[in-house]
Amino acid sequence: FADILIIVVALESLFIMLLEMFGTQTKLARNVFNLKQKYLLQKEARISMANQGLYNGFLGVSILLIRYYSPTNIIFPGLMLFIGFIVIAAIFGSLTANKKIIFSQGLPSILTLIVVFLAYR
Image (cartoon, rainbow, N blue to C red; front, side, top):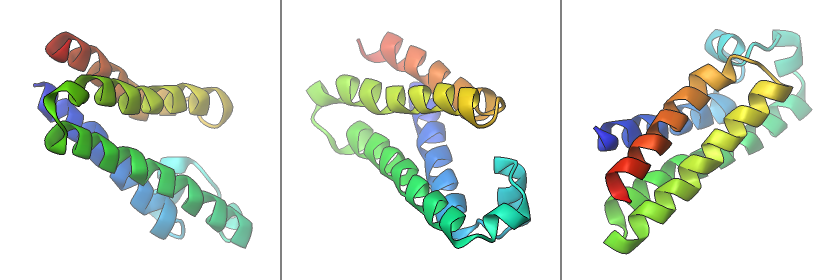
């Protein structure tokens, strides 16, 4: 069960990366991020979103690498660190950008953090 949640959180981060880096002009991105097309047409907004997407991609890849390609003694602290980063980002995002982030990104990562703690400690 823990592995399923870990994969879900990692894939969600990679999906967000793709939307922020390459999909800002799509209706899906506008709906997911609750942003107006006029805002997303601005070069500065696209650059900012692409940079933000890069960090989401780093988190997703890091979670997968830690879980499946790291020595056993690194798995628990690595997963707690990187999934913890996503929890913190979701809390901050829900307070500053869009309250739905706590449910869409925060809830899966908080649940995963709890399950990882119970499964790997």
